[in-house]
Image (cartoon, rainbow, N blue to C red; front, top):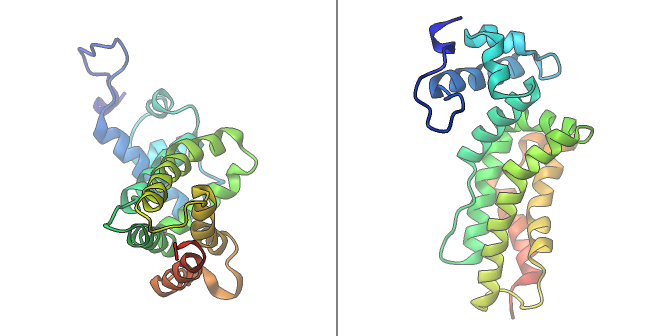
Length: 205
């Protein structure tokens, strides 16, 4: 057992304390191997070897290698693409969408795409993406829309979920169905045009 694999002493809850640096190495290794050779061939043994830890170190933290991938990818994407709030609803949603668009255009898009694909046939993975990514962002965005309605910026009869789907749906469409080279076209200009089109129907007259 490597020294970094050894449990620390004195955990008040009675569980096994997690070494943050070891966890970060494992997540980094999972991302690197996923980018290099794809996630389908990823194994706990391979990740452990790249991270220079024992295989059981991984299994003490995660039930399987796909759980490692979920944590690794979603931690990265969430860090660089938070939901942000500005003075007005339109500004808040545009800024948040542009962060997602920037993320989807690069490394995180390449990582997120196979994760979403596999989630269609893996209930556990789908639930993890919902819990870690979709639901928290959606709840935050609902609040932005509701506050816009309350301030009189948006129509009072709007369903916040429909607004969110109308704005963010095209980003996921272009991420997952990159027709005619659109994989690299989730640009700020595209997002501005999308916001213009949607807000033309939801702004209060």
